[in-house]
Image 1 (tube, one colour):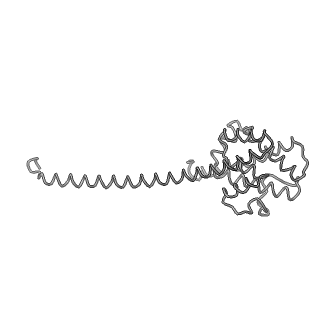
Image 2 (cartoon, rainbow, N blue to C red):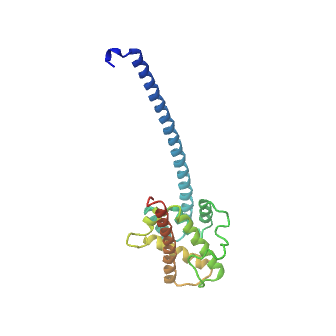
Length: 224
């Protein structure tokens, strides 16, 4: 067909349809963009709200705790990008406010740090502790594990180095909180033993998280 046979009206109509289609695509894109922006804003607001709650709980702990070393260790952990939820979980062993907030984070009931399920909740203790101490430590360590599984990559990259060394401030913080827990429960133990147990707890939790993360990657074809 030659150019002389083309109807200008046909060209005009085709152009109008193309413009209309383009406008429709643009409107759809705008709707999707606005929807995404609203979802992102809502997500950011929730994240900020959670961060504010965590900051208040940790801040309250820092104000009331007399051990300046613990205060410094918490600050170092936060500066190192250790998840605030993990710090709360560690503090939950001895601090009621931290325990309450930690339970909310995990979406569990108020029974989270009480009686564990018989037979499948032993992660870090055996027969070396009195039954009530053993129970509390097992449920506490499982709480850390449950939280860690929600942020496995971040936790593994901040809590432990590529050379398999625990972040020193995290290990020391866990040691001091365990020491406070033992003293509170009138259980005498050497500081060196407490330090070793703190390392054992963290490595047990992180080891389980690493295994879970690797299994997940295998199931997803290596996609994180």
